[in-house]
Length: 320
Image (tube, rainbow, N blue to C red):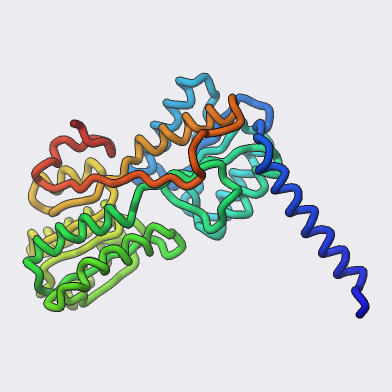
């Protein structure tokens, strides 16, 4: 059987690439050579992403790094450009809340090829062994917990709607799956509408207006994040339909205020501040010692927030 020169070339190229990545993973990535730590997140117009970026920046500066804090606005193309800029700047490390579980893999690989370690927060990618850490909230645990609050508020019956986040974000699917593992056990609860609102408050307001016109008898809304829940609560209030049972995942101050005002029922607080701090501290340790001392994938539990403890919530931190 003859093997073409092209096939042999492809085989050798793939083997070389595989060897390169295994070599990088076998020895510490020393960084690009500068003292710059890049912090790349979605838009800071969302308080969750703003908090994680600001906490990461503050932690990095406290450890002596120069910080460049930028946003990819959930665009994989823009994210790729920002990774290339970080590589050009010879970044010491990259902290990233990514723009897509699949779309981000290539960007992380390019950083690793340039010996720049990457620490992912909030959102995972669909490949292991590239990032030095993937530190995320336990979305499954948090979503199940807040779904139980929702079922209780709905008194185990009635029509409800679901608002989902960006399809390419693994968190959107994880949360929705966990919601339904709880809710679908109750046959008298009926989901009459499901809409994607891309984590966005204004879009959720518009989607909720339409849902209310089509399904005027809904008793509740379960939302993939606080931004969408706050938008839904505003639409419900404007339509004179409230208050309804509304729960979400995030743990923002906006959600806290809506809960205390009786316009939302609860949320699952993701410890955004803690996760961002952990990522920077692990990056610093890795650069100094060659190891984080932690596994790549790290799950941090969420806290369930209701009116009973909402006053203790501030900037994604629950005071004791």
